[in-house]
Image (cartoon, rainbow, N blue to C red; front, side, top):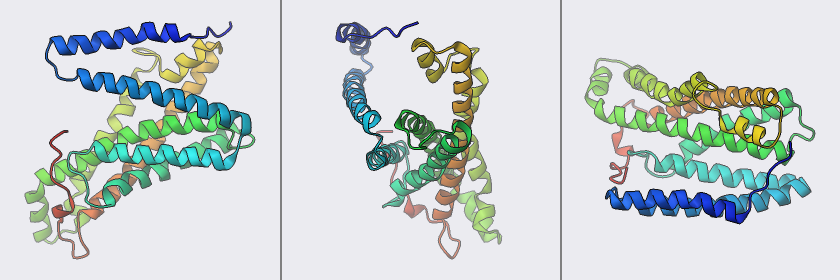
Length: 269
């Protein structure tokens, strides 16, 4: 089976559906038609640019260029994690916690998959590295953002209970343990649900893409399983790192709760 190439006209037809959605939003006064159109335009520009960049990377297999692209992907993901929090950490911590957690989890799991599981030679082959890293960053980004948002929200709401435990002689770790556990659970629920419904409710993106490109269905299913297991591990490790660093940041060296290290609630959230 050969791949059917899409023309600009084909994509134009598909874009009419997005215009229809924006029109429905305007008609129903939802107030999101502008965001729908901007998001569609951004995705068009971004994906076309990525396609051009990947074309160059696939032809050269240059480690410095691949490293630069990976750094850009991590930087944007770290910014998105920060933007998705209602109460974000002040200063560099607001960006650094998410970016560092994704670096430790997504990059480590991706490197493990390329060198040990798949065995790509060289390990930085862009055909494997960039798609795998992109899927890892995209999914761990969502899990970390949800976990951090839950952590800061619950810490703010439960500040009286946390301070009471500190006054009773408990450590910062004991005082925030329950909040931290709930935050981790929130960050892991999306990937757990995705694994539980894969194949029954939906065909995941990578499997669908491989089937459309002509790969045997069983081979596509095996690659999708590999990706989901990697994403689950990356999301879990990243969320744990982010929640631990974030919860530690909420206390000073004298084990006092420091909610002043959180910025005011983001009204646009």
